[in-house]
Length: 147
View (cartoon, one colour):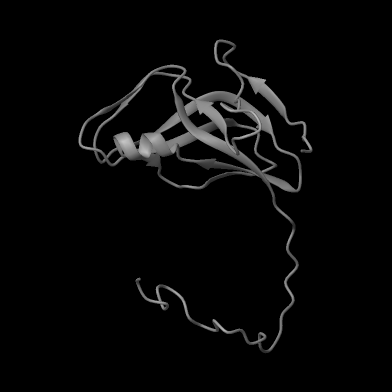
């Protein structure tokens, strides 16, 4: 598997850089909380991660929820997928929302989300009068029914 190098600045040296929990098996790198916080039910907060990254042109960073937090606590990323553009150089933050019934306590260093780096090609639109036909055509939003 080809690796890409991404520059990272650790704003807090007590936090490890994002890492794969299971190297070679995971798609996402764990993002950790750089501060303690409590998120009450139906509340959302920006949680800082203590890092700044320089994503190369042609790539984007996408912040995804952690499935265990979503299933067990009702915690997810409010703007999933959060997008980190290649030109952004500020501290990476994660907007978490509590859909659960209890306050959710975040401790310094807790894994709160996962970062996936993906290729993002530049798009050049080709304006046409009509699109080609497909079998699906305009069907969408549940048009195939529930089985």
